[in-house]
Length: 466
Image 1 (tube, rainbow, N blue to C red):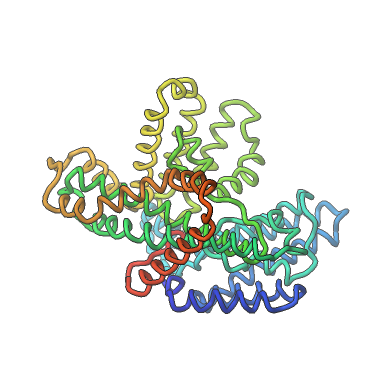
Image 2: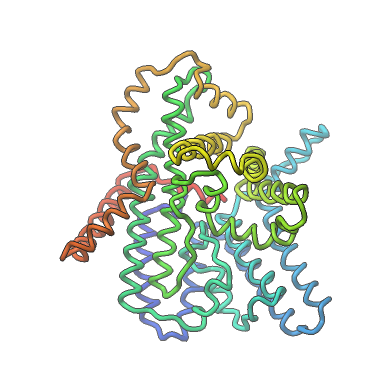
């Protein structure tokens, strides 16, 4: 995928930042808008028009609400147009193929599937743009009269293709006025380099193991190999997505923006409910604000709460991709959260923390099997191999995996807990030259990441697909 090409990335970032810093403040939003278009069009030279269309629709919807502020019907009509048009873009480009294939399978028809290429990050920028019109309709925010400022919000290149999902309210004040100083740039660089190292040095390393295991015959897969493979994916998807989120947040700081946190060490969670309060926090917040609460949340009794949770989690699953395994994955979590809330609420508090953490990790790992393997039959086959259906615990390939990846997996697992960072913060308070050590460490991390990117052929960005 062209966005992962290191030559483009490491030419684009410094040049765009230098231009951004050089121009007067009144032109900075225009630079953000134009660099966002350039960044996106490098990977999607045609589909950039889809993003521009979504931006224009929501901007005009906002201006319409402002113009007809006292006319509730006109305001609601503008909101409906915005929501329908954005969801239609998602429906056509992301879900039309799935719907056609399902219809053909159920009714025996032969409608041609156009197999439209998926615009990168369409789920992110449409949700982001829709948040503006919904919040404006609710009168939670003020209208943005400048198209350039609104477009800068939608097309801002750090998080345009893979989040975090930044709502207009998160950065509305910063679009008007923001402070860009040495401290903000320095903090941004630190966060960016940390994210880059997570993505390149950890996610890519463990991801190669999962890619190899995923390609194997599940019916003959030893149990230990299956577990090592899915643990590798469990770590890969966390470091891939949280790494990109950190890079986006770091770049945001360098531009003068404070994007919301997207991850809070989710694998430390003691319940699945807690896991989802720590994982992809901006998506969870989006669905809570714009779907769960409008449906009534948990205010109208147990039955409707269960209904609302199942709706939200089915939509959360489908948001991730046009495949039934994502819908099953979403419902899987919906059922677990319902059970934790209404059946096991008291039971889950009794065991020691290490027991509940093991339970949570187990449920999450099984969830990643459903998420990553598209065929339900293959999912069952892989889960079966995890529990010994092949009749083998290990083989020579398992030993090779342990020899090549065990150290990397241990390092990744330890870093995922966040304890190394907490330990460093405590130590740095007592070290006189801790700031200098941080600079040296960041330089080393950047150099190692660039060296890896230049030499490696394996560099996927998993959440670009959503």
